[in-house]
Image 1 (cartoon, one colour):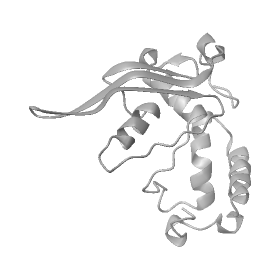
Image 2: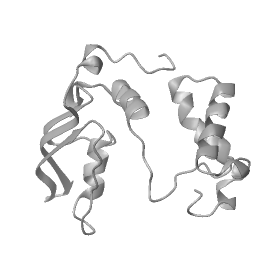
Image 3: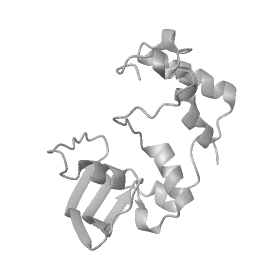
Image 4: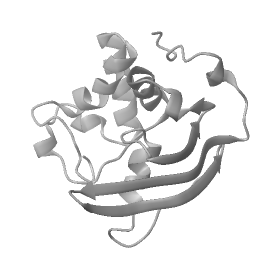
Length: 165
C-alpha cells in the first residue's frame, strides 16, 4: 500500500456522476423472534462535491444509515456503490482501505485514546496508510494548527474540552 492510497483496482478510477449511489438499501435488526426493520428501500445518490445532512428523530435510522454508508455495517439488501466500487463485492481488507482513504467520522463519543496526546490521537489513523512516524506527526501538527489546537498537541483527551476533543 502506498501513502497516496491503496491499490483498489480499475473500479477506483471509473468516472461517475455520483461518489455514492445507494439504491433499495434495507437493514433489519433481529432480537430473537422479533424483527425491527430500520432501513426500508432507501435510495440516496450523492454527487461529487455535494453536501448532504442526515436528520430525523431519535430511533429513525440515522446511525444505521451512516454505519452502512461508512462501511462499518452491511445492508441486508440493496445496492451500494462508493467511488465506483460495488461495496457488496469488497472483502474486509478493501472495505477498510476505502474507509481509511475516502471516509471520515466524527463520533458522538469522541473515541480518543485516553492516555495518548492529542497529537498522537490525530496521527494514529495514518498508521493504517503506512505513513512513517515523522511524517505522521508533521501532518498531525498541521491538522491541529488548522483548527487552532496546536497549543494542545501534548494534552491528553481528559485535558481537552468537549469541543476540542
